[in-house]
Length: 350
Image (cartoon, rainbow, N blue to C red; front, side, top):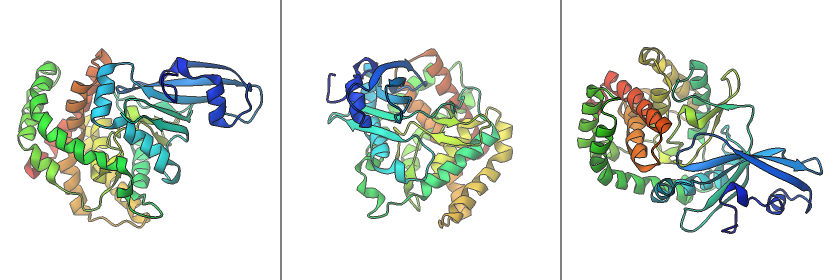
């Protein structure tokens, strides 16, 4: 291994894996792996284990640094690996949120080296960002979002988790960088996105300081990339498992809800027909957890934060390795929430 922990799948030594699981030396007779998922900033692999003794997981999923140096660099700039390791190390098991169990989490000081060994959630399968989701899938994800946004530590405050505070620095970075990035994004997607969307984006960038400066009435842990590619579902879509916690931060719960709804529906008419009901369901679940929100204020936040998915698409598309699927995914991520922002007249709130 090139570090105190494996960084690539071929570095997962069976003896090291035995140590993680507390298994007797020599009990892991073979270990095989294959790529899994479509992540842009790290690489994931499903490992199959052949144990001599029963009682240990037959498989697990490992997340490792991206093989692409551009993506690793972006991860370091935005502290993406630190946020995900922090989530699994400090909060996940006590959060009440549907997410994989964690067997091992480690990160290096420079934040470009990390490893996560996670519970294999098969046969649950990844949502399809390009095709869009079903109402049932979005409703299931809403339930998990409400659980996430309700979480409070038993002692102390959320601010005790240093990795939740990276969001402030990331926001400061984007305040400076997005005006320079947007012309490149506009040129790259000029043949894929409508002029009304690209013009709206230019106006958003001009008012971006106003967008960032609005403080949430009740800060909570947000996933901040709650879209179908980052959610696993059972066959019927009735159970949602949130994965890819590389953007977990302290923020506004309305951002996750707007991001999820805005990016999930391929048909904007369907989204428009169901979004108020989905928001009402979310608020009802918060209330059942003892958290009351001003419904009118939340709806205004939802409208203003309709830009969340669009902004993520602008920033991420420029900072990670460019691929054909990636470009189409980012186009979809931009187009759907941008149309929602147009429908909700979100610019009027900036």
